[in-house]
Image (cartoon, rainbow, N blue to C red; front, side, top):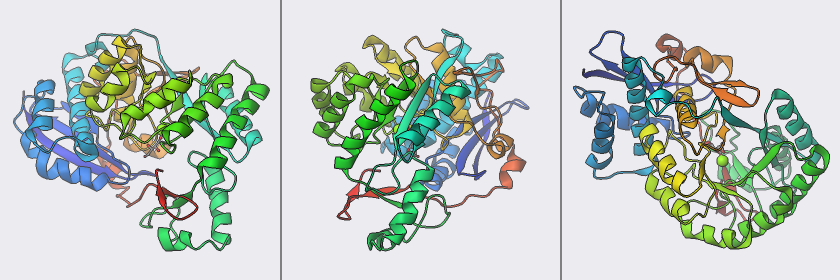
Length: 423
Ligand code: CS2
Ligand code: MG
């Protein structure tokens, strides 16, 4: 069997996705992969079209590991978000082909089911503790057993993960006469196409005061039957993160996500020295080697790489295997800015590895399901994929054409003095 054509499809059904369709010389047999990198979509699409597709034509799609190694090492300039997202697109499409060829779902090729469904989590958020409480209750009513809780931070603007609260704060920011918003952001807002990135203002001191109070409130009002956790989004210094993890201990978080920026892994030792709050990290990593020190030193409890940004199923199954040795569980990244083929790949792996922990998920709107059908389904707190051969996802190329690419940026964060901070 041979690869005959590689189609790169960039579409924007509400948000941008880069989809790879790998065709074979067997009539009707193709694979669909996701190569979406939020805010830098066209860099990946160009790498695929101009540099990677020509290397795939004529290859046997069965040789996933060899294709993976030859694309990773064969570039010489390997790694990084753009190339590893492109590689993930190829890898997931090849696993899709392998499954279809075998007549088996990908989880079966990975060793078969070890569980009936993948425990799922969703996001709750609000402007104050009672809004967050309502939001968490709503998610519990939907069937979720694990919920992430985010809250607007007093005195800051547009806090990460707070949705509507961000917009409310943005209005007050614009009315506050603060000079930076227009100067530094071009006046952009979330999701308004060609605008410059929306700029959030954030300070650590009010943040560190607010988060423990939020979880005290949630445990007091909602109790202990739901697993709760929080995403720091890489904003703290090691000692600030250690303080937060320690202050949150009484509320027994499921985990504290991404407390530190991703570069200096050894800093996690400082948090570990001070707290037993479980830690999760990984959505900004690009290879297994990024994960390795955190896993082998047991500095984290959950590894949450993005299959769409670390080279796909092939890399993730190795990360899961190493993690198993060190009691680290998987919690793969699953936001709306990666496409259904990656969400499906997540769940196929979740079902097959022994050390699965939890799976982040979103409910895709109808417009995404029209273009990219087959995302995992949610029932009573768990995610499921069908037994269809391959990943079970697809692309409707005609529907995709109706939604052309729209340039968009992730927001960014600045401190009160105007200096850049991690978003
Ligand atoms: C995140 C994402 O889902 C998460 O945990 O941290 O929302 C992240 O901000 C986006 O994927 C960025 O595109
Ligand atoms: Mg996160």
